Image 1 (cartoon, rainbow, N blue to C red):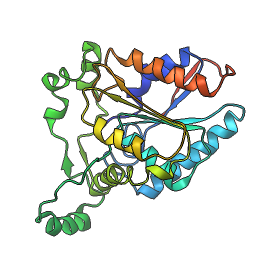
Image 2: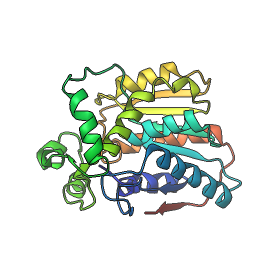
Image 3: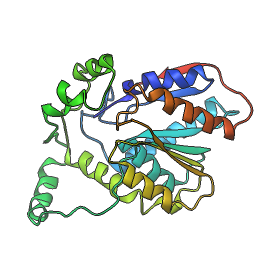
Length: 259
């Protein structure tokens, strides 16, 4: 349910170290014109990333280009890299939402699924409960009061999702690990040591066959890596990893926050 605004602190911090950072809204999120909580298709999301790559290669032809994703965005970036083999210098996966083991599906879902798909494919019907953004819940995973306020009062937060959106998210979550061996670019995976997604992320890392891969646990960190005090440690880990792969300093200190 997040959007590019959540990248502001992280992008600005990397920009101070010399990176050029673009944050974008996936369709159905933030300020995009696609109805909130919906997407046209996974194919369209992949095409958006392909078009972004082309745009940035033209705009910054002399700079190495890395793609970073957070949570579902990290799982999507991994699947896209495996299936489209894009011209990028590497992947940075922050707390990727990946399933380490199959989850049992109630038999009734096999009856309800086709009906829901037929009638609610692009309608926001799967509600995201108010408790998801409740202050008392957020304070358990976000240790910066101003960031808790930001999330609680965020008017762009998703309140629901369509069947198309939900199934796409589930597809990325389930397919990322089986596709890991097809990701052939350097990969950095960062996970908070208090985050349950570390299990799937560790398995993805283990399944990768590319030689240049790194996995790090961030101490005392949760799934909300952009909204916690420990974000500084994440920034430094990313900075060190990037510098090791591009010894020549480059880029202006610019943060592009584009909707």
